[in-house]
Image 1 (cartoon, helix red, strand yellow):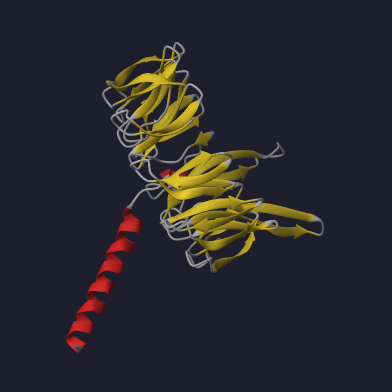
Image 2: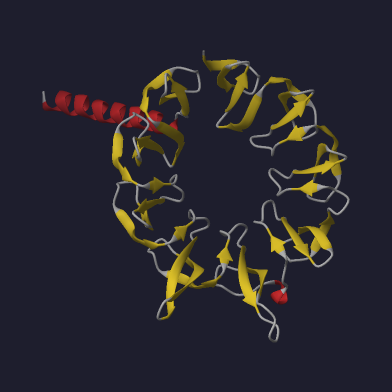
Length: 343
């Protein structure tokens, strides 16, 4: 009898673990119905009834929700696991979420514990183990100097707050702003790059501006140069022939020429000729593009795989993309099939 009870208990435990794992693995997507937000699964079935004033995508198995004027978090069963008591909140990233209480920001862990106490003026999410934060340094009696630095997950500064601005790490490199003064002239701001130890890279090369590195490239401007630099700090792609260019995503970067959009690869070669009236970045192998007033999707070679038919089209995320067709919004899969629509 004891053996039978033992095996029944074991089977129950295994089944519970399987169900928990399935809950964790299924992708959920925010929807809006009758002014309230809930969630559907990948098949378009409503699994969390609309009940929130705002809802966002899941990250680290938790989703940010808004109830009246405050933010909290739910799990994939729709249970509120962190009460909506925060003035502002961000998605979880690397196991921590930035939240604001009154005028100061800190970070929560997934259990709702304040892992890093609120003491920052501004914050960014953790990337590659570090987060850029802004603090106020008391310089003179009535003067406070606001500077950016980088903290670890214990809330300790590993790169002291001494920069005018700082962008999070990507590919092991962060862009930061320093203030330079030449003789008696007004101070000017310049961008430089640092590594995770805070060491200045590229022999101190200064830029007028430089974006985050993605796919080993970062868009930058310096003197009369404009284009993408590599992780050595050297300009490897000249974008001066183009009106606009953006960061890389999935080894493609948008550019605009003669008011039409196309894409280049990480060598600077045009792989999709300029032909679209509007275009967005690639995500999950597809990019939204606008053709004759409607949005569709192309693959990295420029082939239209979902015909242009939407008034609005967003990136794919976990296999689905939000679109609007006529007055109705919903989600499509990568075959262009509508899986859910809000009529």
